[in-house]
Length: 490
Image 1 (cartoon, helix red, strand yellow):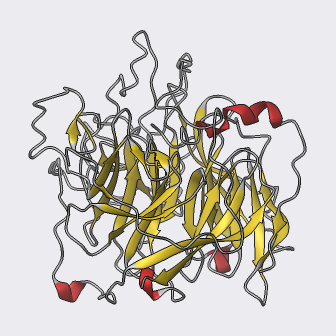
Image 2 (cartoon, helix red, strand yellow):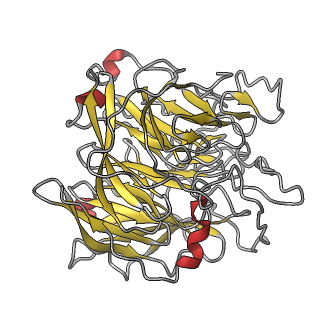
């Protein structure tokens, strides 16, 4: 299942896109599933989350694909910023743990109860939430705009209107739309931010934007720099999440391209995720502040990327073997990279790549593997030495919250408000509405624990500037934003 397939969510919203949405309303106030049974949680504190989706929710795969003709224009082919190594990078890097002196120490964890606190509703297709280095929250709407919320003295949030509106450029919906939003680490000085989206020519686009010189709550409508544009062969698995890493570079996830063709094979029919001559099914690492290219490839490539200097591989690639990494994050304390990769028919998975290596040159397995199991071939795939296994995975099966089918990546909790959540990596499932956790500093294979059974369609999770966590609910008719609240268990 893919999460913007989990965010195929949106099939029914395309027709509704012509309507004017109501403004948001703010509040005042390993052969078996590796998910542990739910613990007793505290019910929602300020509001009851929306109902689970029915026909508008995701299925394991869309019923049909649309294969479009390949345009004559090539995809991005930038040159490296400087010469790189000529030696091949390793196929798999398991991410060895650095010495303890190289890693920050985190406080011990406690068992936690989890609940949610209502922030705002009245959205249409909320699929992302982040911050810009200050107290504001920025909520992405899949149809092509970003809603801005200002924190009030009582710690509630109030809508300040639309920060950005690029609906005219965005092709929505299904798994398409506004996909990602990331603010430059020096945003407070340079005002730059980045958006990814699907355009009307069936291309994946990355734009640089900037804030208005006259209004900090509005983007400059006249500034746009094309950073990256590549034609996408099929309709599904767009990926599109972005984060600036602890190294200062922009990291960008690409889905495997979806499925289609004469066989309509749902399992990456062109094997793009394993091919190093394709950007699909990859984690990319680029330098948007070094625009040494032009046209659809206007960015620099860090010279220490694993495939720089290799004729048979694209230098943007940091890691391969991903299916549809919809939401992922860096641990703000340790620098570790956490990638939730939505599965196909059987398994959902979470991957951890330790700082400072961050999984350089790693193969995450798809489509040789789906989660911890063989996929193609279905047995005797022998991944040893070729792929890495996830730190946690779970089957498509019924749990306390319902049927599990699409993982939504979250973050390691590093806020100050709820010590019981400290150092836990929290993530969700779009279909079941469950929120899980694992120990961010724990072993390389863990069973996730269910912290909360919600009725949400969890489309995204994100952090504010203080490290507190938020969830967007995509449930039909109840599209909302919530804050996670944690308390120590008895």
